[in-house]
Amino acid sequence: MGQRIRGMSDFLCDILADPKTAETIMDKILELKKQYWTMVLDELGDLIDIVVENDDYGTQQSQLISPPTYHSVIEPRLRELVAFVKKKHAERRASGEPGFFFFHSCGNVRPNLPSFIDMGIDILNPVHVNAKGMNATDLKRDFGDAITFWGGGVDTQNILPHGTPEQVQADVRRNVEALMPGGGFVFNTVHNIQAEVPAENIVAMWDALRAVGRY
Image (cartoon, rainbow, N blue to C red):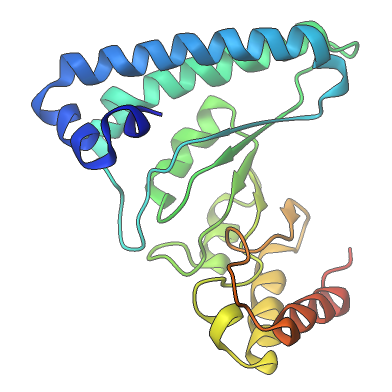
């Protein structure tokens, strides 16, 4: 949201060059998000199983901001939001337990995953398996017992739009076989299916999922 207020380039520069302004914006966003989730959960809390938030921290190669800046500036506010939402959700559910916290963050977020898990994020999306550091097998091995991967099922940047049906099916099989064992995986594409994807590739994706994606 800060990027929408200031523009992406300006806001990223603000974090380093004008941290007071950047952090004031982030604190206001945190306040507004708390107000939003209070209203939603007060009305619908016992009907909601999954709470969804998003903030993109990664690129194809690395992170949008350095790990020290993430840990000192971004993480404390995200941690506060997750704790607030989970507490509020638990208060509004008959079970007394919060639902699942689903967090969408694109790109290479592998360095962020330990903090995501520690603060109580239950689900990662879109699982950008074609970004550097986001190999599906490695993610499952290192984090699969602590977080659910909701995504990573097929590459939507290269293989799905430009590959053959056989390449699509091979990509689906490879990713599902890496992420599915032991549970903690919900098949989804890596982000949205883009325009002008050949229909036969979407059918190939679905056929491959039906063949290998059943527990």
